[in-house]
Length: 203
Image (cartoon, rainbow, N blue to C red):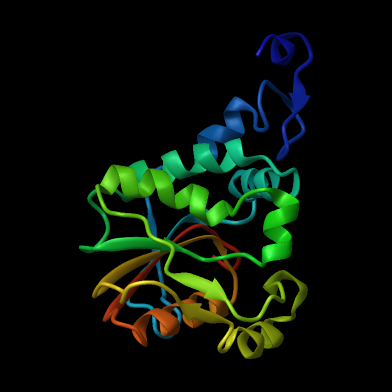
């Protein structure tokens, strides 16, 4: 945009002048290849682009806390390119649902925005397979509370899940949310649930 040329903003990560949310140097630090991580219980394999610290985390925060869906659309494109040829065979993609109140405030579910370009790149259908039973947000809980609070927090909806499902979220912290989502899918048809996230808060 013309305004970006004459009135550049500060980079969200390093504070240097930037035409967009991140300067060119910080954008170059964002990984382009997936990194496997130890999967949480009930998850077969888990993958992330990189750690939450640094430019990648700043990019996520830009999207979530400034309600910028464009950040997640761009992130989803980066994720899609990174996962091509790297993931096990999957039959459908779904995303972690967010609390209804949060969706109304933000205007979108960031995990859904990430899933769309991944599904397009992999030529796999993206389906809503999960709903929240417990509306409490995990970000307000301690690590122990996350594990306890996530149990039974999600339920499968719609047609039975296919055998191989890819679950997508923006950030993995304790893994409790991913586990709860996977357990709901495994109870209704899935046999293997793989996890794909942009960033790992402890990786």
